[in-house]
Amino acid sequence: MSEFKVVVTDYEYDSFVPEETVLNKIGIELTFAQCKTEDEVIAACKDADGLINQYAPISRKVIENLENCKVISRYGVGFNTVDIEAATEKGIIVGNVTDYCLDEVSDHAMALLLTCARKVTTLNNEVKSGTWDFKVAIPIFRIRGRTLGLAGFGNIPQTLARKAQAFGLNVIAYDPFIPEAVAKDMNVGLVTLDELCQQSDYISVHLPLNKQTEGIFSDNEFNQMKQETFIINTARGPVIDEKALIKALEEKKIAGAGLDVLEVEPVDPQNPLLKMDNVLINPHSAFYSVEAEQELKRKTAENVADVLSGYYPTYLVNKDVKQKLHLKDKG
Image (tube, rainbow, N blue to C red; front, side, top):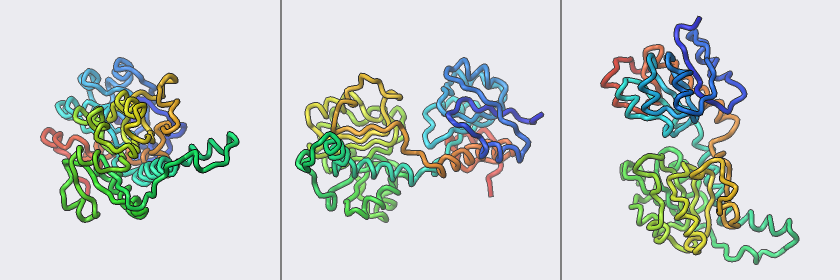
């Protein structure tokens, strides 16, 4: 019998070979659940030493009912399913994986940008419906020399910036937490959110979802954008006020949108965005590649293995928890 109990709270995966390879080395067998509610998580995880979490809610109520938990590790970069403050108060380490899909998400954002800018989907659909005429997509503007605004300038948007610059785009960024020297080294100008909205021809959103960023793109922001602006979102749906986006599109205040994420997922069949020809919608898929998924699963398990072996994990979200714990630093 395992010394520790580690529960996967919920999952969409068919195989757990990377996780099991990591955890079996320290004698841990995974327990699997498919929790959707707080009460289901409590029932499955009350006595667990570690949690691996995808979408199930790890709220304050859940955390207060975890008797033995030492670590919660999330499949992903974001950690909005976990109440970080509650976990820190209880001395529970929260881990994520910040670097597993840098190329995938930046590639996807660039693909959405190019598809919107060159109106690839519009032209494809017109040809397949019997219309052979490039004029159906007029106007299309040259990409080189235009400005890409990045909302957030962490690992993923920094990767995107290099790719966008290869297309001749001028890149600016809004991120109050990034040192100016970091942006300057990449030839990226740091601006305010208002300046980003006013100056950008394309805006790519890469902000985490929290109380400060929820609905940060709303009526005021869309009203400042150019009519030619496309907004791309591969981060979290609620960062954009969807009602305000729909209004801006209906009133032709902006040119269109490329969305990999929405406020409500899966998409509501009645969502007006589905009927707009100038809106691309993908099913929250930007993170995915075969390689990225394997890396994510391995690193998520390594966070758990590190903590249960007495070390702080490589990917530590709630650094303040160190004031309560006395684990060893890796390396």
